[in-house]
Length: 404
Image (cartoon, rainbow, N blue to C red):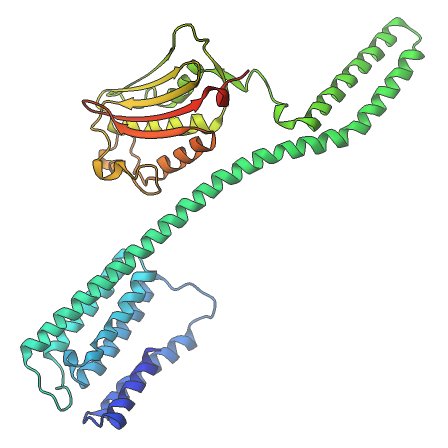
């Protein structure tokens, strides 16, 4: 594309505008650029991924070739000096930051060099000050365009990663939900062999020669009937076919599970849990929801990095609601991120060098935790406490969590 544009430019200058320029040298520079392209295409395998270093070399060669051509037709006095932005734009869109800086620096250096080392623009003699100013303007354009594209690419990559993480979490939930259908299929498939076992056991009981054999056969009949009853429940209501003891827990057990991974995370911070409730209101047992435990474990992990000395995980209940809250005594949420907290890539976590856990935050933890809690019916809020500290709270209607 660049070679084609250069050829079109020279044709327009020579035959359209009839400017006087060293077209023989210009043609040689364009031919050299075309030759580099042809050689690269010839020696390079068709299916491969170009490395960052090779990409930098290729883009810098393009910049040098463009600059040589521009030096022959006016340098920065030529409006087509803007073509130097093209390789930098490509680098900003596809390469990491360090290679981008290299390409940008080469393009900027060549822009300023063209302000003082070039043949005069055909038929026009511009002062050095103007040409230097044009060079500076081109450098500013390179910086602005590269920065804008780089930011857009980084934000797009971050959002794509956030969506991938969320889709992974949701896919896991879908797989868990699919177990209900699997249970129904298993109930259907196991029904026939259990019926056969029941019939054979009844025949054994009827023809038993000794009391012991008859007792064993009756036990088989009873156990087969029990299995059939379990399968009927699986087929009819698979979501209820769970371990009732494991699938329910008290609020105290919930907050203990939340703080357990972080109880000894730091010698400087004490992590405690309490449960309080309204007077004369029965303490509820709730359904075990992995989303809730995961989300509040994330909030506590974040609080460990910011708290001065204490983190309190509290569960409160009354006749209508259940509230779980994480409160620390740190500096609180920064004002500029408080309004957007819970969105992807909004974070106040310190870097690894200042973090107690050594974790560098990306802002995905709060986003995923908030999303999971809201899927359970919670209303999630973030605010700063007085006189200091951050508070993360989730409130449910009691009927949404309580085991009846």
